[in-house]
Length: 261
Image 1 (tube, rainbow, N blue to C red):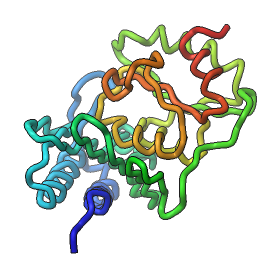
Image 2 (image 1 turned 90 degrees about the vertical axis):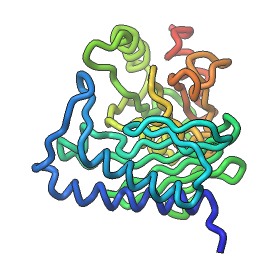
Image 3 (image 1 turned 135 degrees about the horizontal axis):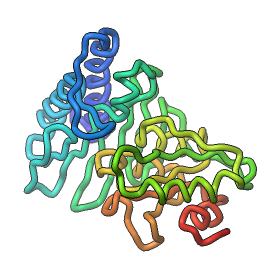
């Protein structure tokens, strides 16, 4: 039987999740290394990405690759874009909010996304033109229509990131107008949670493609509006993303972009 791209991605993500759960149960013995301020990598990340690469490229040996830990293999019209452990700091600290993220790009367009949360047993998935799902349940985003009822997610910059002041300004404008904001430590899951209606919107600057590729597919297929820092900017190119349900988007994006005061 022919294995579909979606089935291959889901199977690979769950296998990598099993690898991570083994490390999760003995995480006190992990000695991470530091890539930068607040940016860690561990044996868990490396082994999970190795599992993803072996499983996906054994099914699709001619495909290209972009992984957070192993870098890029280019030259193909298709490539897998993976973050083996989105939320490494949460993982290392024992906070049960982290995920495996797998996306497929064809001819420069994102066409498939899978985000697997091993701790909660939730697998979010979407294929372009076919909708988004979580464990068999369709995802359609929230029905919130007013900013005063809306809950948003973001990722806060840290260390020496140049846009700390910009993000502080975002919060100053947004917080008085909404029901709250969450910073949970995994951009992949934030995007999946907006698709599931658990959050009403999400924004963040300067992310890596592997952080958001799968989540962008899932968000779009759940009916969300997804833009970059401007309406013309593609978040998969810039790394900056603004998304929410359609009812809130114009007001929310205007606040985040400093257009509404």
